[in-house]
Amino acid sequence: MSDPAVPPTPPVPLAALLAREDLGLRQIAGPAEAGTVIHWAHTSEMADPYPYLLGGELLLTAGVHIPEAADPGPYFDDYVARVVAAGGAALGFGLAPVHDTVPRALVAACDAHGLPLLEVPPRTTFSGVARAVWQLMARARHAELRRVTEAQQSLAAAASRPDPVPSVLRQLAQRVGGWAVLFGPDGAEVAAAGRDPGEPQPTGPAGAPRGADQEARQALSRLARIVRPTTPAPPDGSIQPVGRASADEPVPPGRAASPGSSVPVRPGAPAPHDDSASTSLDHAAPGGSIQPAGRASADGPVPPGRAASPGPPVPVRPGAPAPHGDSAAAAPTGPAPGPGRPAPAAAPASPGAPTSATDTVAGVHLAAYSLGAGRGFVLGVAAPRREPGDHTIASVAAVLLSLLTGEHQSASGAARSSALVRMLLGAAAEDVAPLLGGDRWLVVHARPDAPAAPDPVAASALGAALGSPLVDVARDVVRVLLPAEREPAPQSGWTLGVSAVAGPAEWAVADAQAGRALARARATRAGLVRYGARPALADLVAEEDAAAHARALLAPLSPALAETLRTWLSLHGSWDRTAVALDVHRNTVRQRIAKCAALLGADLDDPDVRMELWFALRRA
Image (tube, rainbow, N blue to C red):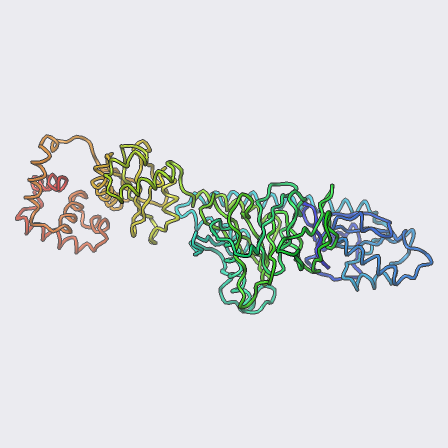
């Protein structure tokens, strides 16, 4: 039996209704599947209830419509077939006053068509059943809202951690019980969390074969290409995205297409509440165009199998999942992808291009969300089941990841591009600085507290937190060029070194200052250290004379020895802290300092010698 196209009401498990002892309902026919859900209860004594059903109902009847002289077999077979075609979820037959028992022909017809049949005892009124359904719906809605609220709070907390992107992905994977991955603009996996569907498993979801998980992972990559705005269009235009809006919340257009997974829905049609995939489309119109498979009525969508209006009916394969209101559809035309036959590429980005897409492959529910405004990052989610609220939770994560991965707009991208081109063509730094934001700058060196090297996404998030998009990831250090009016603050999970204010001509000097400040910050375990730039006695000496004296005094020392001596003096001769700042062993520091003393012919324990060397090192 095909799932109905149902309005946005929380699904109520049929098992929960049967468990209500006050109702006394008993299932006597049809499949006893745990996944059967209903969306409301409706009473009708019409011989053909099809025109009055929206799909997903528990249809209640006392059998008043049954003709006395009719052959019970064909009549009940036609009746149940029409209920199933309308998308009815289950049938409840009330005992007394019309019938003392449920007709055997009705039981046989429900078994034949796979429609659950419930026996309603005389003491239970139909209005009591309807009230119980609404109570369960209210309980489900409350549980869903509480789950979504808790997820929003945990995702927001994860976004404030030192490693925001991996933390958000971990929380998302935990909340949906699956796998979350961030695809970069080139399609590569930037970060991931949760159980990877591509990992070998004894069995796939719901007993699927071993290759099912890998198939799901590949399908998720194809789904990401559908929503990535930079994907080129196929020559034959094989995928046509069609948007749809939900009845109770705006929905980004674009559900994904894979073999027999999606059907387009006309924009504006009410959306069902559950997160199931779209109804399969078996036939497309000539020329690769898509014909709508359902008609939107004043009070709900038309269930699958009915004719679209206007236009001819489109056959829909029974057994396909129902459309979901959380995203739109993009259905493929032409040959379906399969082994040895790759899925078609996505359509190019346009105002109506899909920004999210869903699919179900090998029992794994997949979803992809385009992040930001054309940056090319895509969030992918794979889960063995799809629960109400999953789309909302994933959407919150997508918004947070958009902020974390998006380019900070303190200056336009065009201006930064112009500055880069001019510098590559020989322009001086002071000539391009106005394009970047001013003439007074700070250089910030940052190193993550975690042992892992910083990744580009984390570096971009740090730049956004400091207020600048001018970020460089250099091995284990992130360098940020920051306008001086933006005072840097300590960042959780990072150790920062900040230079003195410098003009564009002194950027190289400021870079060295930030590196020294970072080394001191790491050695002293401070979150942020600023390079000292206040006036001192040394400033009374002319800059040229001071530099000449420094070069002469330090001439015997190699750059490595000079940097070791500078760090050792700045840390008051501490062997351990100097070793930490330089990432070397403390014995290496002792050996280098001893060599400096020998080459300089000086007693480094003498404070006057130390003062003179410090003066020279600052001017070198």
